[in-house]
Image 1 (cartoon, rainbow, N blue to C red):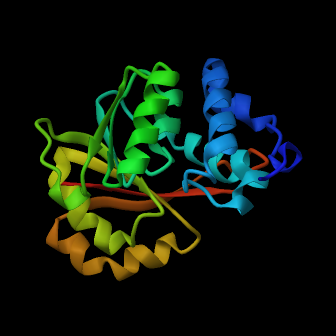
Image 2: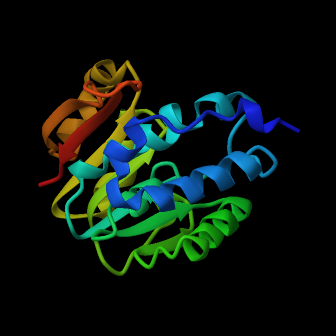
Image 3: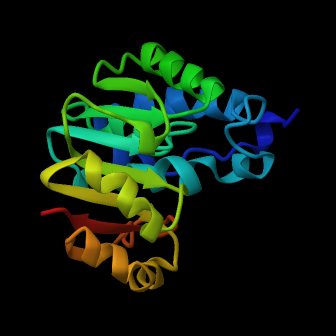
Length: 211
């Protein structure tokens, strides 16, 4: 069992990211730190950076979202879906996750944290048939951009947007996805870097719009 001392202390940047939602973010982070490894949601090496590498990393994406319906593909531990739902109570979220154990966690956190703006959908992204098309879709550590495009594009409403969290190779992923970008007629494809003014790892996002 990992000792409490190994869990990262909340950095000052957390309040800058979550504002008056900080207490909800704290509750989620504490529970994820306490039970995440046991439930197979995070690895033991993640506890010393749970705020900076995971929770704040996801929270930085919140300003890119607009009021409407946002889907999170492969939501897992709720990174970024639950974190974004905490930061943006004015946005509705559909968390798409195929694994039963993770779906149970997502539903539990939804109720514990009072997230009325969250719906959990147990399904694979390629099998999802939503009654309402999404305004935006996000994903983190799921797949390469080229593989996410055919998963995300059919779920989006006309003019909908992908807001996909990526690593340092984001620009290369765009180059490798050239065929899929053309096939799905994506526009405005770009890499956005977030968090440069805070003492955290840079968060990189690929943004792209469907016709």
